Image 1 (cartoon, rainbow, N blue to C red):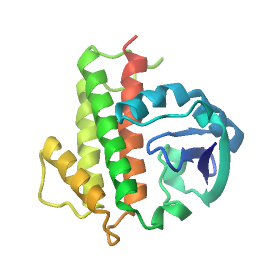
Image 2 (spheres, rainbow, N blue to C red):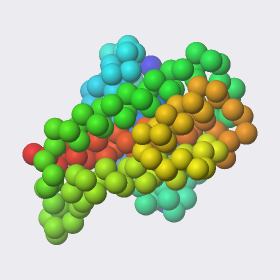
Image 3 (tube, one colour):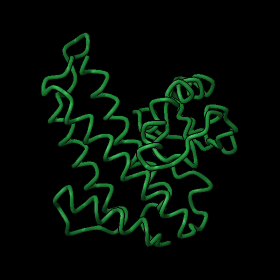
Image 4 (tube, rainbow, N blue to C red):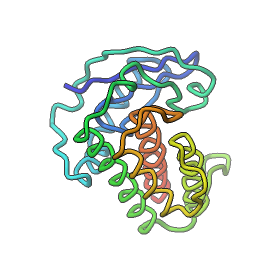
Length: 202
């Protein structure tokens, strides 16, 4: 059974797995968010396996252990709130797992990008970014996220990734975002856009 928390906004609700960073999905209500989270279990399994982790068949059975109040960012479509268990101390083994999952998320994203066309299918009104614009957006977001972990001067995407991993493995307790939340937010953003590219490549 997978422990999840619910982030409840006024218009959108996120369900996020505590122990599987990046496995977060949203809907209009809690039941819908949990349903979508379960629907994406097999897609997330690719990330877990890329990290060398065993993703159990029972992963899509959920135990809601916490609920937090969201805000405007939640309604905009971002799992924005630090969850109650995110401040729990990290053991070296837990920090290593978090780092491994983030690296796997990047690896899956890079593989998806490499196999995608430069022009992606647009929405019904012609909206949406093409592949390279999504890559640039993800890189820029990671630069912003890295500052929450105390990373300031580094600008190159590959160097930012390496610096993030170094911080996660060191598991400091004085970062702007708790490490657990930072990893979940970074992995979610990368995975979400990998899935977007996959879906718009067909």
